Amino acid sequence: MKKLPIGIQTFSEIMNEDYLYIDKTGIAYSLIDRFKYVFLSRPRRFGKSLFLDTLKDIFEGNRELFRGLLIEEQWNWEVTYPVIQISFSGGIHSKDDLEEDLIQILDSNEERLGLECAKKSKSKAKYYFADLIIKAFKKYNQKVVILIDEYDKPILDNIENIPEALLIRNGMRDFYTKIKDNDRYLRFAFLTGVSKFAKVSIFSGLNNLEDISLNPDYGNVCGYTQLDLETTFAPYFERVDMEQVKRWYNGYNFLGDSVYNPYDILLFIKNNFEFDNYWFETGTPSFLVELIKKTSYFIPKFNGLQVNKSSLNSFDLENLNLETILFQSGYLTIKRLIQEEMEVVYELGFPNREVLISFNRYILQSMTTGSGQVTIRRELLAFMKSGDAGSLEPVIKRLFASIAYNNYTNNDIERYEGFYASVLYAFFASLMVDIIAEDVSNKGRVDLTLQVGGRTFLFEFKVTDGEPLEQIRRIKYYEKYAGERYLIGIVFDPKARNVSRFEWEKL
Image (cartoon, rainbow, N blue to C red; front, top):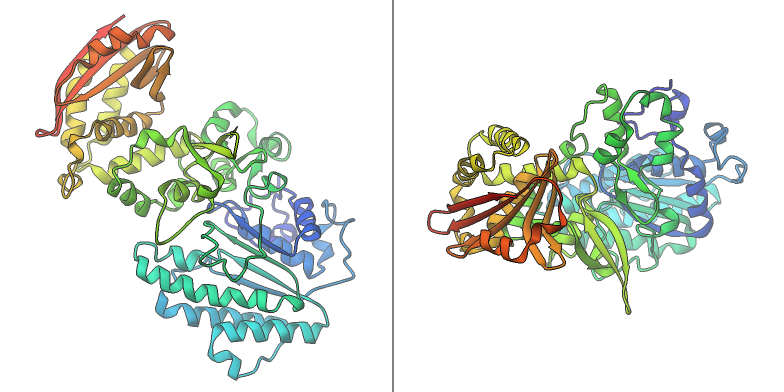
């Protein structure tokens, strides 16, 4: 079997060293043939850098690397193009260092292309970039290709300092404007990133970019499909529960096929098929969690969230939209399209078990103190599996007692039912059980439904007063479920910030 290309983003190395490769060259040819300026947004670790490097070798005419691949007989290998390749994927970029970082990147392109740019132009990165394009065109007597990887990383590196991020955004906008200014010298330009900023900001100088991020023809440009796993990867997955693999790692939807994150699959194989949160661990969403807490966001809303297309494309530093950030960074994905009279609406949700479990555990870790979460999870799961609903009360009380005090400061969050529902939802979601928030029946809805070991648990919450258990009985939420059913009503005391009454009933 071929070696696994873990962490390798150089196309030539993959082909020369006989690593496994999923052929994306047919998609590459379609892009080159149809467009001149292209933008692609995908979450981190999805293979953007490898695809970009593949484009570089196509334009440079390195046919020997493409033997047997889809593009080999389609592309004219006799014509080659000078390629300017810019990547921000390495390191952290600050406002003070960005200009120097850009100049160093352009220096490496100047050397690789054998050019000699004017000393005067090198005083500013944007002028240096423009001079590099013109010099490349003149030397090679051929139009220039520009490939930019992680174009937005300098901005995202400073997302927790919005004034600084805005300064960087404006500087990057001036830099990228040089692409449009030199249109007559260019054959093709391709930019990738995690986020797509609103057109009034960084893309104002590049309004001719074709965004393929949600173009169904290019939904599979990054990631592995189910067919890839069943064919190319088949020898690696003998005697592996593929349905379990699908539940854990499949589910990302960019309007093509449902895809797997490549990093997950490669690490899963390397680590002897141990299910773990490989992709999630490569970058913890600390900024997102703080934004969730700041906005008192109702966490169960993440599954079933409905947004329009403009919301998914409107990353605006001056008006951060949580749903947009979660989608573009890969924590939420498209679950289905809803065609309404005036527009298409996208229903979002967690893509798979890895993200659902890991994201909710991370939220809880950011809110709670101490190291008792593992014990609480183990006890809750054991009690539900055995049908011991009464023993859930002290464990749930311990969970709320562990919430850090600073989560309650400068707000009155403890007065909102949604806060308590969010905490319990996040906790139960981290248990790997089937969970439905605001479960709808033909007679109404219940706050939380769990299914564990053939048993169904229906929770209703109230703050200060109310009769949650009686509400479940009266509305008969439970009728759509068969087997053992447990009705659980919980009342929370905002002063104590904990459970004040816990009642349950078995049907």
